[in-house]
Length: 266
Image (tube, rainbow, N blue to C red; front, side, top):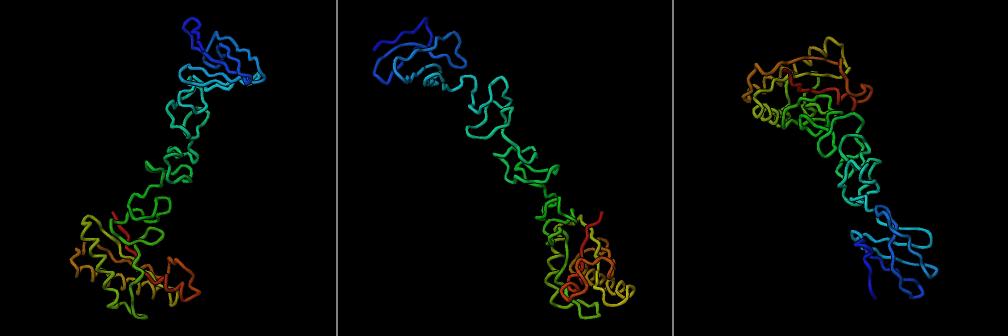
């Protein structure tokens, strides 16, 4: 079987279902001045060597790999603003990978694909955690906790395991382990100053609880001073019952309100 080059154009071989052989060129996208082949049988299949891209002609329909879409993403090269998109990656009308949550990180690289609109993200498309406490900035109510501090779900440095006898401000010995961990954090972060905030439940008068909470905060300050923390880095504050984090109608809620919070300050 011989092949013609048609004036140095790409050769084409047409095979009919009847077994007949004919020569011609397919008029596909990106190939100008080519003659439409005529099949002698009911269906003809033609293979072109043009840039290695096959063309198939079935009846009146041409099926050609588009020679003007280098990355084969369905967007023509003149309109493709991302001309080297990896194969198989969904693209927008400009030929660029999709960014469903609009955070600037395309879906193929985004490990956090549903970040809230307008929130800053890292190179992986995940929300930032500026102080590295495990609570992302959008949820962190205490955004400047020092490295190593144990925080609650709101990102705050709360000493929830401090124990005081009822109506007393002296620390229970079982609280010492948690305070030693606090001292280690402060020693590792010598530039950090803290306000030690004492809180109570709603049993008793506001004035009484404010005084009691201040004494409990002062007990924490004195313990940390004994662990080597300079007193000038710490301030004891009594907030009493003014900032509950749970309902005072149950013992479980009141227990959460009896707490000491360490708040970094400038």
